[in-house]
Amino acid sequence: MTTSRALHRVSIGAAVLAIGMTAPATLVGDTADTAAATTVTAAAPSRSGSPQSTVDHVADFYGAYTDALYDSGHGPLTNTLRRHYLTADLRRSLARWEAVHHMDGVLRGKSIPIEWKVVYNDSGMGHCWTRATLTWQDSGHRVHHTRLMIQSDLATRLISGIRTDR
Picture 1 (tube, one colour):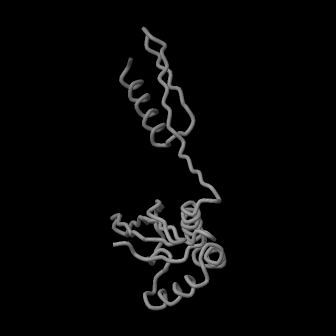
Picture 2 (spheres, rainbow, N blue to C red):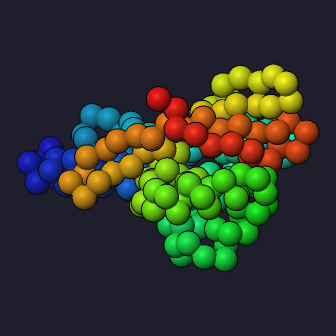
Picture 3 (cartoon, one colour):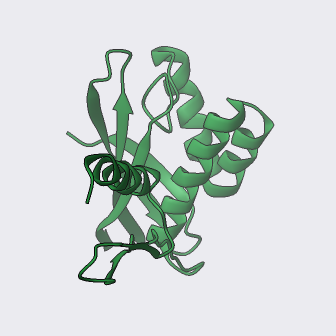
């Protein structure tokens, strides 16, 4: 195989990996002694959930809220999401918190996280607690995390409390 052909194959392979193809791709070698194919397969990311799950309800809220902020900033959609997912008492509490801290009380930050993750923590006495980890990237490309403890009412699945988890 010539050097230029080998470099061409390496660059094609690098391009396939860089693109992160989700469908199987076949790269066929043309060496004189074999016509074997090499298959490169990348797994497609999967998301799932249930409308009956309180944890999924919290994860859905943080996903939708973050997407809305990313797409269009604070506005009618973020307010609608707050009304749909948060109790009235929590919305009033967040308004007071935001007036004092000059940040988004749902995120406990001024910007938009680059990633979020929600996991079950505990439940009892009519409530479910989940932990949300928000990942941020600052202007220097340094990554940091905010960890929140989210309280939801089991009867309604509405989020009724958000606090920083230290």
